[in-house]
Every structure is written in C-alpha cells, then in structure tokens.
Length: 113
Image: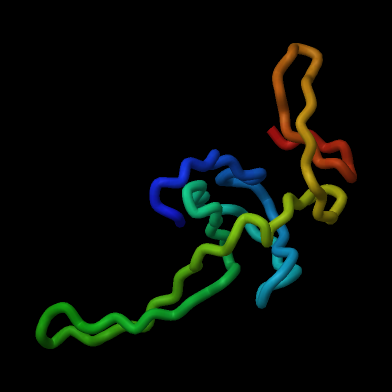
C-alpha cells in the first residue's frame, strides 16, 4: 500500500459471506470468508490458498511441526455465491419496505443481509 495515500476501504464482501473464487490457482472453489482485511483489500477464505509453514521447535526436546493455514487473496478474485441456486453473482444495493439498505445478488434477487 502507498504511504500517505488516502483511500476508501470498502469491499463488496464481508466476514461470514459465502464466496466462490473466480480466478487464480483455486478457481471454482467455494468457501466462507473467515477474515476481511479492508486496508489491503484482501480476504481469507476457508479452504482456499492453503500454505504450509515449517515451525522450528521452541524448547529443547520438542519436535518441529509442519502447519497449514489459509493465506489472504485479493477481494477482486472472489464473487458472492448463492447456496440455493448454486451460482456466483455480482451484488447490487437495494432498499427493503422498512427503508433498510441491503445487499442483493443480481442474478437471483436473493437478499444477503
């Protein structure tokens, strides 16, 4: 990220959303967003972009470990996913009868929140 540059940290996805990866090594995978990083415009998706890390032993006599974790991917590489229709879609914003602004899937018309 560029120092001193003012940006609006707004992403189209939130923590807990069901998304499908639309590009990259894990293209086509569906998972839930575990964490959103708006400053870098990245998200961590469950079961996507799995990395391995070799951890040295901390104490004497202890053995080392190989741990796996989900690394962040850019938010532009994911698209919201409808579990009912089994399809990925862009979002639009609309208002409900009581005047609440909600996110809605364009393809299915399904309201997300």
